[in-house]
Image (cartoon, rainbow, N blue to C red; front, side, top):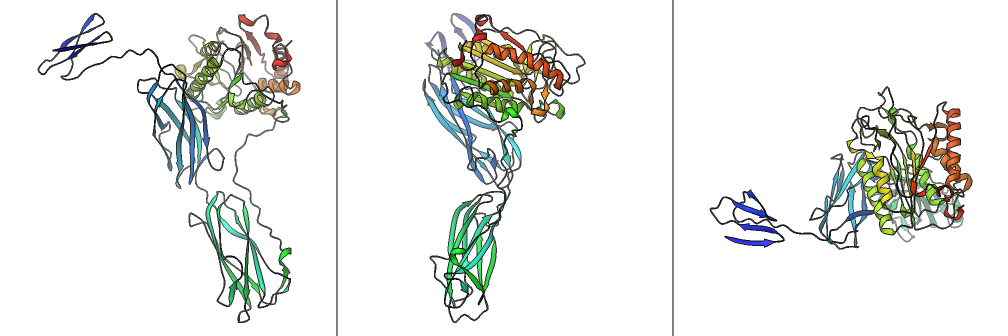
Length: 576
């Protein structure tokens, strides 16, 4: 029998015929059944990798942020190793949380190889929408696996898929002319100018056009009777000049020109004929006016900006690399959970988060690359982004400012009264996968950022803007107080058992509306003390006027900054 000792483990090489042996591990013995010829080797790891996913982006050719039928697009991101050990045999695995979307294909496994400490590698996941793609939401789950189990936190990304809408390439208008004007006669130059336009709802590609003369008594005098374009977007048009001569042998009274349009798919072009009569009075060529059909381009969804705070957002020059933010707007819970009604959704939370991000970037000097925006975020997405943002700030040093904003449902445990933030895919009846508010505070404080600002347009009593996530509750629960540490200020939309209410006329939560209003009116030139006084007074008064219900915002501060926070400037240049 052969024995080899590796890092404190006794390894037994079992010879044929022996059924079992004792295995001694660090001085302790146990019985283990080991198959013949196998060895178990334990390794000691002194330096470990720490993988994170960064700078994720979806890129598509027509930039409508959807996966369209007959379109090749891609998800790109970086994998960065923040640890001190090398990540070995890294592999990216891609799957769909909703299992299957007809007509959608993508790379399911991408080998990356090793990633050394402080190294990052770019990853591209190609995505293809086929002709039979259906309207759906593709919920991608992207996992970064490492040989030793040191995986990155998974990335989840939701992208709408859009079924095929055909192009329609036609001759929108056509005019005949001569070089000198007057009556059309034989044996003179004739110009046909026509406009080719795509009046369909999707891009046309590989467009070829042929102009056919009626017989050999008509002669081409222009450069070509074939024309081509790489693509035509919806509503786009191109003008074409086709010149020819009808000789004196031509016998017909009309000169018909057949125009054949073909595109890559072979189905959505036009075969048409335009004619001109002999002796017809024509304009001179330089007076021809083409009036193509004006059709709207395919609709691209944009945020509806209807509130006064959504317009005229103050802009400052420059930004600070030391500012970071994570902004979350959870509105549509019905889409992700069966059996709940639309009333459970949090009205305007997406707009709240989207516009608040604009103020961070334009008014408060946060670099776009340092601001992360999540709309209708799942538990996986919220966890991944919290992990990423806090790690970035911790690595960047302690002279940083961090803002965390959340609009959506909050809920306390009925048993413990501990408050939770609720992702859109988590049921209010099962808080196992919800996110403890105390865990969020701990993660933010652990960054050691010099300033941590938390804005919560949510309540934690079980109520909501229209209806609580647990609408069947007859009694609301008063949440327990959550400890705040670090250099943290928390602005909460409500107190005690109150609900966070909407401001329907402005399409915002009432707390967020007046938060944005103060930033708009002051262009950020205010202190947090002034902001706190404004919100507590204004929201309390306006909620009674607008909603006829009480809503009293609260401001809570950690003991580390209790004597100084009121003088902090919303923009650091206005310190008092």
